[in-house]
Image (cartoon, rainbow over all chains, first blue to last red):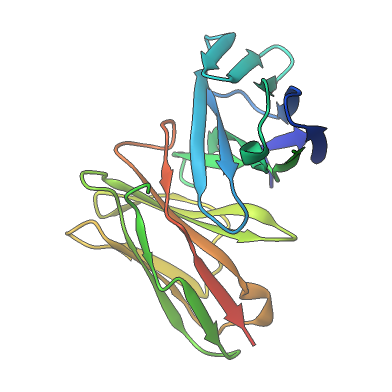
Length: 114
Length: 113
């Protein structure tokens, strides 16, 4: 089962516009991460935000976390065609045996048109 | 380049067969993870090993097994393959546990015909 769910599932914007993706999750977390995947390639880590943080920046990326609403958002500012990819949120969740596992949402496909 | 190496990159095999996917983690990473990505199921966590020991288990079928060797490389064995096992299988590694950034390989495309 998915812990995180991205919204919207697909987004198409023009180059230079901002893109906002949302992630909702179900159980309490220690941290939340965002990853990016170019078509058919491996996932690449973008940013990690801990449960005691509310906002984090990395270059053109801004991530917010609202633990009361169990939600996070990823904002990409001044988007470029090269930002076209699928974006996933990932949260730690309890695995069989009680240890932690990293669970990914279904992903959101972002298309940036030149 | 994440530093995680997976082989083979592509594999086509018949139903009922068995295949082995191999993963070399980033230098120094003790944790190895296996994920399966398919169109209908998304990215599913299969299993994690830490320094040779199984650490966490996800939605891994009984027909699938994995291990991590003393040199920290890992293998995922898939047996009695079915059409529905066709997917992209990712290996990832990290220095510690699942609460940290993990680094993905480029995946092994498995097609079962």
